[in-house]
Length: 89
Image (cartoon, rainbow, N blue to C red; front, side, top):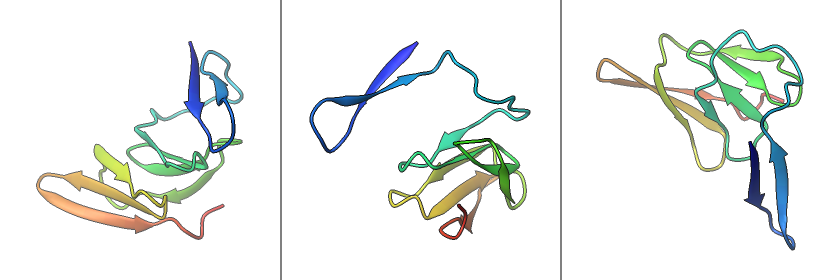
C-alpha cells in the first residue's frame, strides 16, 4: 500500500507501507503527528529505527498524541493519563 501525505512544499511525501525496516514486537496503536514517535499499548518507539524510548504509564489500549506531538494521552477504564514525550528523540 502506498500513501501520499501532504507536506508544506509542492507535492507530497510518498510512504510505502509494505516495506519493513525492522521487526516490531508490539502492535502500534498511534503515530505522533510529526511522524517521529509511535506508541503501542506499553511503549513509545522511535519511528526511524524502532528503538523503545519510554514505557507507557499503565495499560493504554486507547491513545492519541497531542497535536504538537509533545504528549501521549492514554485512556483506560474511565481514566485518562498522559506522558510527556517532548524530550524523547
